[in-house]
Length: 356
Image 1: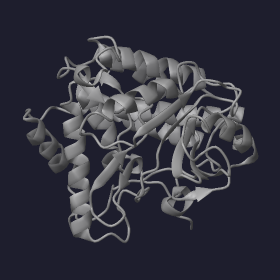
Image 2: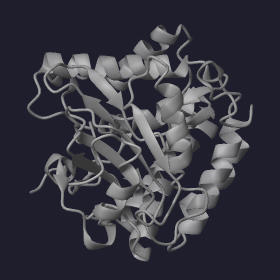
Image 3: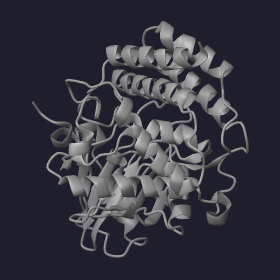
Image 4: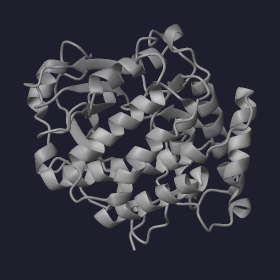
C-alpha cells in the first residue's frame, strides 16, 4: 500500500488545470527577479489540498511559487495576499520561514494571484511516526517543533508589523463562527453532530489565556526539516495565521495524538503506537514541555480539543467540497464523507465529557 510519504512527498508535473504559462510568467519575472526571465521549468509539490505550490527553476536557481487555485472559491479562503504579508513580517523575527521575494495580484500572468519565496532545501515528513528516522533524531525534531510553537505564541505581532492582523479579543467565538459558516457553505449532506457542535461549542467557550500570534495549522507536515540535521529550518503554510487564542492553535497541533487512525492516506496518527520506543513524547508530556517553555500553568484542554476536532472536520468537509467542484489542488482525494462523520462524533464525545 502507498504511504502518505510516498503519496504527498516530493514533486510531480502539474495536472492540466494547474499548469503555468511559463513564457508569460518569465516576462513578468524578468525585470523583478534577476536570472528568472526565461528558460523556466516548474514542478508541483504533491502535498497540500489548499493553494497549489510549485518549485520554479530558472538560470538563477530555484524558488517556490504559491498561488490561489483556479475556479470558484469559498469566500474568505485562499488569502495568499495575507499569507505573503505574514511571511514578510515573520522574516524579520526568529521564526524560520522562507524568505519572501515577490507578490503578484495580476491574474493575467498565470490566471490567479501568486507569490514567490526562496526555496528551502530539506525534508518534509507526512507521517507523524517519521519512519526510518533514528529515535534520538525524532526526539530532537519533536522538541524543536515544540520550541518553535512556544516561541511563536510568545511573539509580539506588533513588533513585526502585524499588530492589526485581526480584531483584538473574542478570537475563539469569532473563529468558531467563521468555521461554522465555512462548514455550512461546504456541507454536502447534513451531519447532525456538526450542527450540535456548532451550538454547544458556542455555549461553553472558555475565558481563554490571552491572544497571541498563532499559525492555524502547525504540524510536522508543514515544517521543513534540515536535510541531515534533526532541526526545523522553515515553517510553511501561513494561510490561516492570525492573532488569537494559542490554546486553539496548540489543540489543533496535537492532532497526531488524537486523530483517528486510517487505513488509507487521510490520517497521520500516533494512536496505538509505542511512543517511547520511537522517541516521541506522550501528548501530556508534550503539552507540559510547551507550557514550561511559555512559563504558563498547564491548562484544561477539554474544550480546545473538542473544538480542534470540530474544526478539523470542517476543514475536511471543505476539501471534499472543492473536490466536488473540481478546484482541489491535490491530485489525489484521500478523505471521505464518512471521515467527517467519524471526526464529528469524536468531537461530540470530547465536548460531552467536558459539559456533563
